[in-house]
Image (cartoon, rainbow, N blue to C red):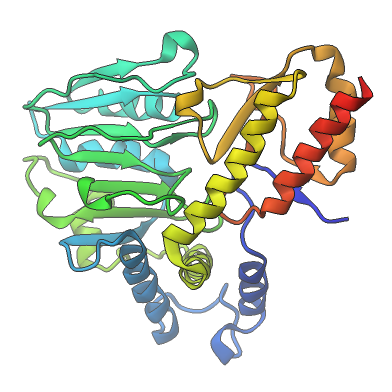
Length: 356
């Protein structure tokens, strides 16, 4: 039976990426060696890293605009720490938008470095919306936001116009929709949603932003040192970088971000229409802030949960339960999830309605 993977991450990747990466595990680039055992300093892998860094900038439309792409380790959680280390000046201040669990984690780390202001928060409403009309202090060293909130199913549809450098955690919607990425001074994203397997983090940073904090930054946390070393300051996550490259190549061949955005919008439109139409279900996020990546929804009557759970499992659906912070269900519709999988879920929801 075909599986329909709605896991929030690590998540579904394109089938051709699985096939190519599996072949590389056996014999990478006809070298007779596995991708798992080659030297990260070998000519073959240096070419992979160079192409991955260049392709990330190309897909975002940032090549030739003063940005550097890095493939680092530690997940987005490491960037919660690395961002203030590199951008928050001694005796400076940072501004953060609190829209969910991961945004709150970033705020916690920044507070260890200096004055950290929360521009706005939706915590009191269990993060069911994105705050609007907030103010960013003009003297802040940077403003930090989270573009998509995996747990609570919300997504920023617009970003503030400000002269303050903008930092964005795009872990769960990187490469999924068209934005003017030049409005961001630093973007970071764990690979395990739309870009590759767990184990590597993409950081895209405007190089002119760095080296201005007055801090003594530990080398492993210093973006400038990673740029100088071309993401090879320490041994990189070789397999994760290679698989991320394959995923970005797949996306480029598909037509890039404009092409995948249309597919993602079609998937989200189909599922949300059913959630709103079907009297057995209701969404948890405010409609205007609903995420195209993570649709969170509840049964109006939990008495139907046992039957519904049995039905979607029998249909080959996997990874549908919601996070404990919200409960219910979460359908993660990342780039590689086909429209067919959403059609299967919608069909199950309609069959449940007819059976009641």
